[in-house]
Length: 284
Image 1 (cartoon, helix red, strand yellow):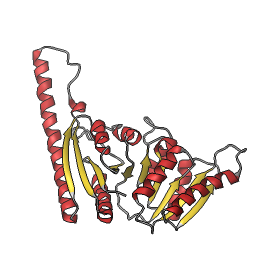
Image 2 (image 1 turned 180 degrees about the vertical axis):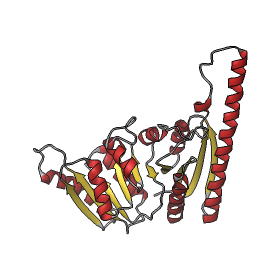
Image 3 (image 1 turned 90 degrees about the horizontal axis):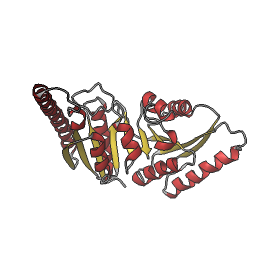
Image 4 (image 1 turned 180 degrees about the horizontal axis):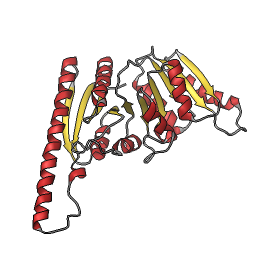
């Protein structure tokens, strides 16, 4: 069950959407929210200064100026968060931390059941165009599942689960079920994409989904569908199926799909995180 939700705040357009998802879940499960704004001083601290006292003094003043600007952005983010949650009547805490965004979010995840964060998160407030690797690090290293949202909100009624029987996909499925166990009306489709190993029989893929289905049935979920797809790129097939059934959420194992940004992960989630218009539920 969800009792505490952490929302990572940044200046991008998907942060208000993340807050909206958090409010919706908080109202359903009587949970509290924590809005976290990080003043990432690790990004703006002047390192490797070469020159005399004048240049050192200038660098120090610049760092202090940028730090103050970043603090003001963080305060505005927290103010917007407070307005939204107070209007909804949700219990909340608003926190501003300084340091590396990755470290502060990971620390916060230790004491929350779920992290909600925007897909296009840029936590370097003073340089919003810089693409950070914070999202990738958080998803892979955090101790709680992460809901990665896009720039639009939709109520979660139908879920597509990319399930291959791996430890990562099993962890994601279990986390989702245990957190959302009171929402039995959700429709769930279990999808397994065949690999190119022709020696593996179709019955093997079916049995993997059978085990997952029996687990969901034990929790009282009844709107279940199993689907074994033919060979192909998992990312393309998952996105195609999501559009066909109009799923509102995709569940994946973060390591088994391995790519939120190609530089930091792998390939499949790269396709999903950049092309999907619905949230992803990921577990390390």
